[in-house]
Image (tube, rainbow, N blue to C red; front, side):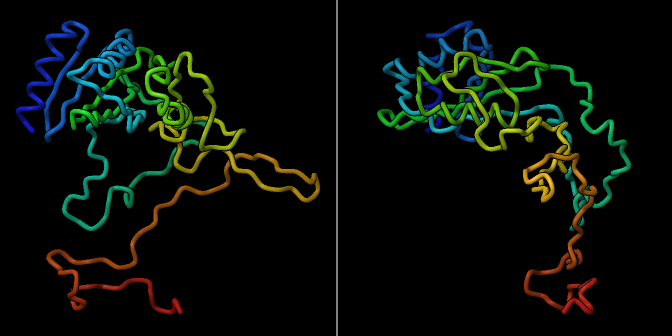
Length: 240
């Protein structure tokens, strides 16, 4: 498989030249990174070229690199994640503020499959504008991209130019914001309920208090899965 990927990589480099921003083979997979301006041309080439023949688009997703590489959930060898000690003493008016980010924040990642040649490839394109992320749609090349692009728009706020029906697909019609952005509050911003007096559904600011669920059973260091003697049960008294 390594030789096949190297041959495919060499073919793409010879055929596409400067249109390729980066190429990388890692963990038995080939990833191409391209500029937004070359995204459509390269996608079309990957489908039509006989050596490539990636006739199926099997997945497309958005990625937010706002906190990429930050080991926020490093447990340090304990059973607890950093969420247990996380500081929630924030101002409600500052929840939606976005940390400063140097570089291109949003990317679209596409996974392609060639049934004919029994090979796969990953195509990655970064959005040029962090405030208004957008790339071209590839629905004219692979029709299966339609709902995937709608999902990336809904959850990340990435716009796909010339998409035939770009609207939310998972969240409610009145939803505000994009849940998978790393500056979006985990508790959300709005909640809805049915008001008996007004006889309709109304939207209100979220009333949920930020909190962390702490496990009731703590496994000591070196404990085995089946060793009950090394388990300390906390907070279970009177639970019945």
